[in-house]
Image (cartoon, rainbow, N blue to C red; front, side, top):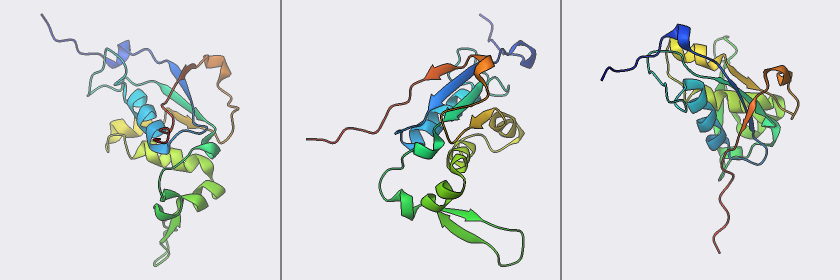
Length: 150
């Protein structure tokens, strides 16, 4: 039996939509990263960009667990000497809600040129509306937060 290797010419891209409202940031990002890499597909090949397009809506309503709202910090730099500073999740979400999900997914993708190409297929929107209705995206369900133990 021969080993199957997917060629980039044979990749057929599909569109998927994830609703992040009320979901945990890490679970949404992990699911989106797996789909972008193509690991959800039976024809996955690690050296070929065989992933799909992912649309994440309601980025404004994504949740973070524990004390991450104030404790998790993002580093920003303005390219001037001594101008780097840290910002908590709450401040980043207030300024640009899509950035929290985009950074979480980007950091789960491979750190090479292939990962950059995968990241370009991620579309994140703060609200529920997006301009990709013509692509007929399929909905993906992500597990919500765990129920409290009684």
